[in-house]
Image 1 (cartoon, rainbow, N blue to C red):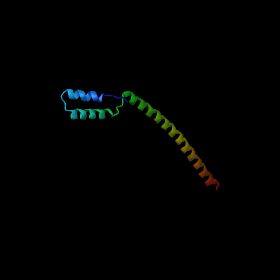
Image 2 (spheres, rainbow, N blue to C red):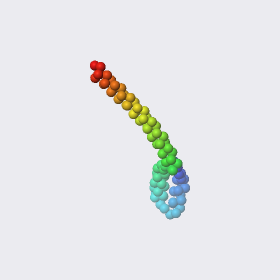
Image 3 (tube, rainbow, N blue to C red):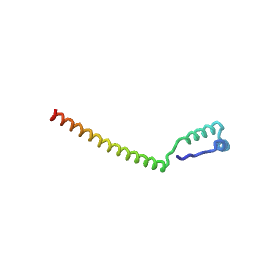
Image 4 (cartoon, rainbow, N blue to C red):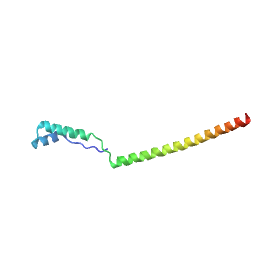
Length: 89
């Protein structure tokens, strides 16, 4: 994540020197400082997240393939057991 920092004291001082009231200057700087705490994702962050998601999806697909094979195997075993029960009593 990209982080932007600012010198709060210098910002307030600069606004006051330009003729702004101290309370207004402090409030404006406070709002800007709060806005800086919002995280912003860079293109690299998004690429990394995309790659992580692709890896997770691949893992999930492999797990699902394994589960499908297990379900088919259990199904076949149940059918064989049912056929044995029907024909052999």
